[in-house]
Structure formats: structure tokens, C-alpha cells
Length: 466
Image (cartoon, rainbow, N blue to C red; front, side, top):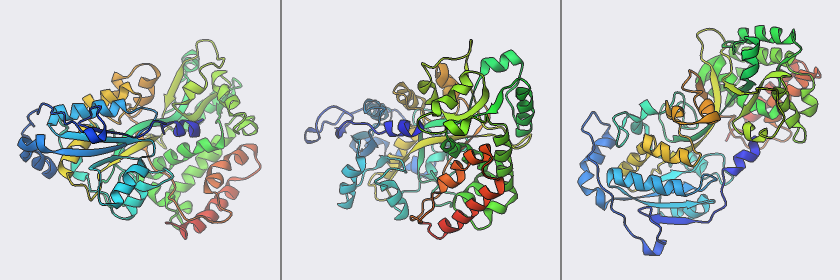
């Protein structure tokens, strides 16, 4: 399941510290001098201009890069650092560890900061969150206007739409970017594309079209919808919040703003989920648990339901399961609220940032910009890590090309989650919001009872915001 997949992102190898991305130990640091490519003289950001002025001295600059070691392995980081040095002349001292916080946290307390850190929010040690609260992250908004080293495009032209427009990259909601998006995994609706071809059905573009398809499917004893467990409604719900009111509404809802659940946008969200529950296969709630969720996913493979919300890991989970003749995975974003409105697909992604106390900020920004080069993206992709770069999915193969091209095909990325709070006794907001879907499908609770519970818990959490 997705929680297991998320845990797999944390690898099991020990600490590795490399200088110039070579293989020598820390006490025997060996500087690998790379060839310096001439930086193109174009319209540049202040950081880029400073970097160009320092080009002649690049061989004397070494940046310290710290990256969390995950299931993708350390080799890709070594190769990327070597390629960066060859491109810019800026050398890299690389540190990777499965518990990166333990390594760099102690160093930072002693005043020794990395220049670049690849470490996402949401980890138990919460080092990134601590830096956010202490205003310890460098503003990297100017990186977006920098030219990608070795290319002619700006960073902002490379990053897919929506990835720099959420609290995951702009934690202070001040219109400034402090964290760069890295390595994403899209979520959306999975279906059997062969069944649609056989029936002559089109994938719904709007929710009105979804309901029309639901009636056609019902006439053939096929449910419109299923879900593995109610917990899978997190990505679904977040994407729907974006569709109803955009990033501003999403931010208000996920920060428990007073009265937000009575807004027209929230009413739309509740109405859609209530209607969708009526089109959901009725056996789903009884199997929506950790023991039997595969039975719900099997409904799609058996053509007993058309759509289910899930992530890219579902392909591996169901690779040995029986399926209808000719079955072929299809993947789409949620239908839009109406014609001309944006469709969204939720995505999980990691983050890279520069400490405000970093010594070599200009060179560090060059490194961050290089992460969006085709060269770096190719190295990462070979290890299974996909960068959120527009058009890059065309270079992928098989199912991965289908999944990761979703943002190239018009969908926008939905990003973020409910804000963290101090513990509130008796409140499990995820269960209140997502878990109650089982009761909507079974008829044990009404939409209004669900809304009342959300409003009650939201009021309590608002007072407990960190």
C-alpha cells in the first residue's frame, strides 16, 4: 500500500561522505577538477550574474551537498555531482545518509552548515520543519529565473505547472519560494482503458460527464467507482479542494479557517463526494481495510468498477492478479468542476533547499538550478527518481510514461495537506474527513453529519495550530 511505498523511500545504507563525488573517505578528500563550460551571456538573475563573475574562480569553490539516502541509492547523487562539476567547474562535497538529520543536525548546531540540502518535510525528526519555523531557509525565488546550467531555458520554464505554488515550496505563503520540488509520484484515477475502447466510452473531462458515464455503466451492471480504503481519499480530497477553489481556497481549508466549510467551494466538494458515494460499488466498505483492500482494487481488473483513486505503486501491487482479457491500465486526473476549469492530480514529492546560513549560496543556487537540466533528470530517472520537468515524461517508457505525463496533458499538480497541530484529545482529522466516506457509501451517515463532524474538529484544530 502507499504507506509502505512511502517508507521504502528511506534506504538502509550507512553514511557516505564524498568530495568531488569521488570514492575516497572523508579524511582523504581528493578534489576532482571538472572542465568548466562557459556560462551563456543572457538576461540573468542576480544570483546568476554573481555566479558568472565567479566563473574564473570556480575551481576554488567547493559546495557541501547533503542528500537523504533513499531506495533510489547514492550512485545517482554521485553521478549528478560529477556532471555538475564538469558543467560548471564548481566542486561538490557530497554527504548522504539514511538518517541525514542525525549527521547534519549536529554539524549545524556547531555552525557548520551544508550549502544544499535534499530533505523533505514530513519526516519524524522534522529538521526541515524546524528550519522553516526558525526562518532558516534561504529565499530561492531567484533560482526560478536562472538559466539552467548547460541549457538555454530558465528553471521556471522547465518545472511543471503548479509545483512551485504550494506550502510545500512556499511555506510562508508570501509568494516567495524557499524549497525546490524534487522526485514526484502522481496520484489520480486508475481504470481499464481496454474496457473504455470496447464500450466506446470516453474518459470524463468534467464531473457532469462522470455522472453521465455512471448511468451508462449502471445499465451494464458496472459500478462507476471503487476505492482501496477510505484513507485513499486523502489525495482525492486534496485534488478536489484545488478544483473547487484553487490554491488560495486549499490553503484556507487546510489551515482550518473559520467558516471555510460553509463556503460555496466546500459545498461543491461535499456534493461531489456524496454523489460519488451513490455510484460506488456497495461491497467496497466491507473490504476497505488493510487485510482486504486488494479485493477492492481487483474490482477494476475484473471490470466490476470503472475508476479507483490510487498511486503508481498499484501496478506493482496487482502485477500478479488475474484480470479481464486485454486489460490495460489507464490513468487520469480528477474530472474538472466544469468546462474550462482546471483538472488536478495530487502528487507526492520531495524537497531541496539552501540553509540561510550556507557559506556558498550563489554556487548552491547554481546546483539547485542544475537539478532541472535534462542531463541531471536523465541520471535521476535511471535510478527511478523522476523530476517534475515539463515534457520529460516523453523520455520514459511503458506505464511510467503514462503516469508521469499526466501534467503534460493539461492536469495541474495538487500539493500539500492539512496543517500540523498540537495533539487534540479525541480528534483524528484524517479519520473524520476521509474515513467517514465508508459510512457515506454504506448509508450509515449522511452528508450533513459528515460536514458537522468536520466543522467541529476543524474548530478544535484551529486553536491548536503550530
